[in-house]
Image (cartoon, rainbow, N blue to C red; front, side, top):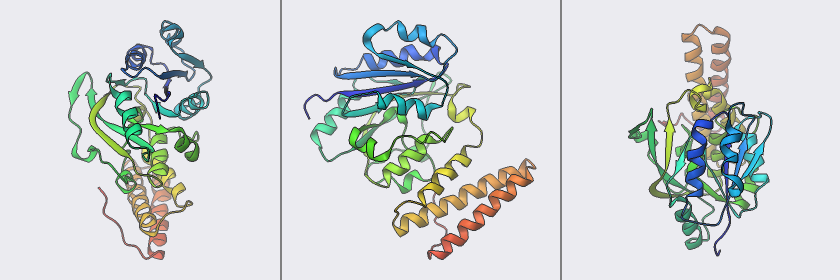
Length: 288
């Protein structure tokens, strides 16, 4: 694979104040064969002006607000590269990020997807990720069940794998990355490049994981979808164990806030999953 074209998709919505730095970090990569597509998901700020200042260095797509999943999927559909990468519009890349990932694909033709370590910035200050956020390499399905292990801004995958996965689920307003990575990691191993080659900037009010309520609800949806796919028996038991835990967390939180109907619904779901787990000969698996 000699100098493959890498398609980079930046979805954005009302992040004009962050976007220029993100775009600049892509255009400043040491690897030259990059196609950059910015998908504006219906922004009402001055995002268009920011993007157009870069001229012909990128492709700009604008549409109605349909969510980040639709924006990413639209960008990939319009792209041409044999390798696909994503960058959230509040994150930035280190200059050697793409080169390192392309080199890995060239050196290891059997690898279908890789990701990198990351630097965390919160409210403008660098912070150390907790132990539970430590990155791993190889088969990541079960480690990915409790939480999203892979940052979209860090991943690069072959287009053939993307096509098999079918893209992000546009029905999910959040946790769409958690959903896709689970569908991916149950199929293929993921190779980690241990260098911190992305900078994740968080803590701001419009960060999706902060501004979207009920995240566990969408994780439960993603996990439940997996039960209708081909899983090994240990994988099925692990998914059921995680569903029980997440439904119990939602039920307890709803009860604490005196949302009795919601608490009852998720308590019943947890019990249904307990029955399912018992039916496949499993016991609750401890996953932090």
